[in-house]
Length: 348
Image 1 (cartoon, rainbow, N blue to C red):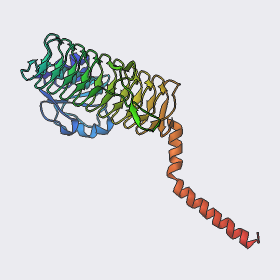
Image 2 (image 1 turned 90 degrees about the vertical axis):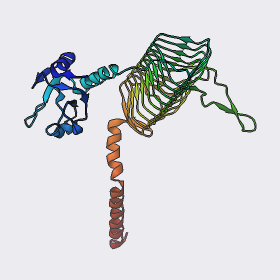
Image 3 (image 1 turned 60 degrees about the vertical axis):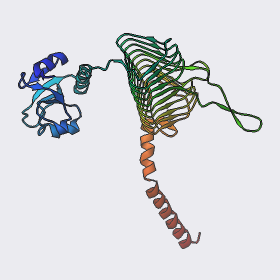
Image 4 (image 1 turned 30 degrees about the vertical axis):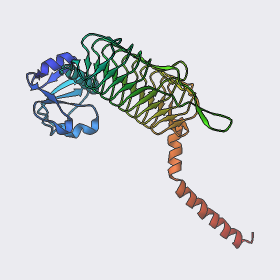
């Protein structure tokens, strides 16, 4: 599908510099621009590519001032990255959608199916499950007993949803996601053998949540593990039993959240962050990658780093000293040798 520059500019509420009639049929990275494609520039370190790129249209911020002459048409917007993301979403929506129910799928007769759904080969929908309208269930997905899937949700290949879990509307669960596996609950007996504690709770995932590939969210021991509206989870994240993650919180890959921890809304956790159990994290907290948190964070908007994590600015100062420890050690050893020499010289 082709789009002219003036149509794109009107959609994004942007202004055009160059040929308003130029057409594009695809998108491309700024480093690999091709004629007939659209690219964007938001990070200044990529500016060098714009002068040699063959892309026909560039989305740029209103304050961008090119250092050299450009052949391409520019569309100036308030936020280039956000506008480009909006276009990609439109592009995705216009792609052909899968539909129909495969004869190789297994759907229990007591399951409730919405309108215009897709169910791929070898997927299983169990007794009592409820599937909303416009849901897409790719091949080899398992939907357990009494599971609810809201309208417009997409389950990519290999997703497994255990019994009694609830998935909201317009969610995206990528390949290999497991929802509702047992929490890690074991109690030692008198002989120090570990006895399994039954995990009889469930998982609630609210609307517009996206969960990356091979992420796991355990069911609650009692009650619910809850992922609130708008949460975005990266690949390979582990969320333990009875955890609650607040609205619009974003967590990067390989992070782990231990049982019963409560994370506020609008938080941001970098990759490989670890949280011990039973913590409470205030709204708007940011935790840098590879940090470990071992105590509550009660102040909203704090920025933390380290293991154990503490104030980001203080950590950065400490890190500068840490890097100089070998040098400081050598200086101390040298001073000790000089003091010893002086003591010997003056008979002390």
